[in-house]
Amino acid sequence: MLAASCGTSEVKTSSSVAVDDYAVTWVTPTGAPTLAFYDQGKNEKWLSTATPASVIPAAFAANSYDAIVFDGVSGLNLVKKNADKTKMRFSRWINELGFYVVSRTHTKEETATWNNAWTIDAFVETGNSSKAFMSLAENVWNWKGLSSTKAETGSKTVTFEAGVSDVAANISTNGFDFYVVADPVYTTLKGKMGDNLHLIYDLQEEWGKAHDGAKIPSAALFVNSATMSAHPTAMNGFLDATEARIANLVDHPEVAKEALTAYENETADAENNVEQRFGIAAGIVNSLPTLQATNKLGFKKKADIADARAYANKFQTALGAAEFDASLFL
Image (cartoon, rainbow, N blue to C red; front, side, top):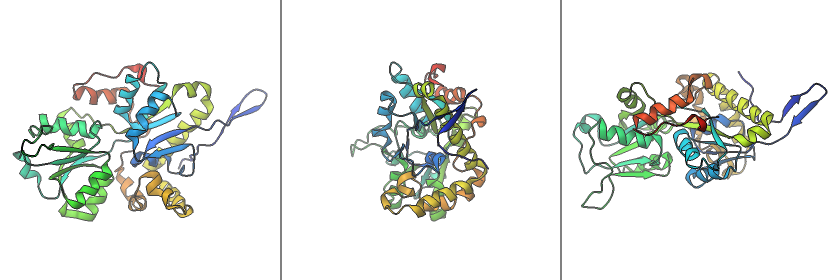
């Protein structure tokens, strides 16, 4: 079991011990990647946002945080787009989530012939799961014309929500034929709905079959290279602590459960409970040891992805996009 914290760091010199008390600031979306900070709920230097699209892209351009967690491919595109001003650089992959196409009313056998009247609810149009889904639908499953407009209603076949939680809410009302979801939402819903929620496609499995074992990347950590130069001890301490927590999520998930439970018990303000702060429902917290017995949330120790750039570029080239340059990586 590894200890993890984000405290100050000591720098040993030949004559004294200096302390770099610089407090690292970072921003993340709410959701599964926040578990990499399971013991940091009370840290005021961390912003977790349920509306990342309105906060995080601007943070890349403004260099307003020392570290950012975001969809890895989207983040790399933002670093590339803002190359003349951003100091943010890719540091490590955090996880590799499961993504799924599900339905309450249709089975996989029915989808062999696509019906143009069917509708799909997905999340974050620019996200990797949506990119992979649209590519597979068009090029592998022969679900043609998904992005076209239905002439009779003027509505789109695919609706993209702001986040996967919106898709989960829509599954309860069953307003669409198919839904694209991610873990842990899928595992939670399947546990509640059982045979009433049909798995149509496992997107990671389908993407791998179509593209020589490639994976759909998920969240990544980006760091401010200017802060790294100015406060190397503090930043390396932050990175080491993050590494330790991710290792615990893989090998000792009960540690994360205990920390999150303690935060929930100590927090009287309902606006700052685990679900608000981390975007993780109580049921997921309670079942973390079971979920993580098979690493359902896909957390990756740094050594699990030996070449972070090659991992990203395998997804990029499968989409027909340009490879990411080495200068975007720390």
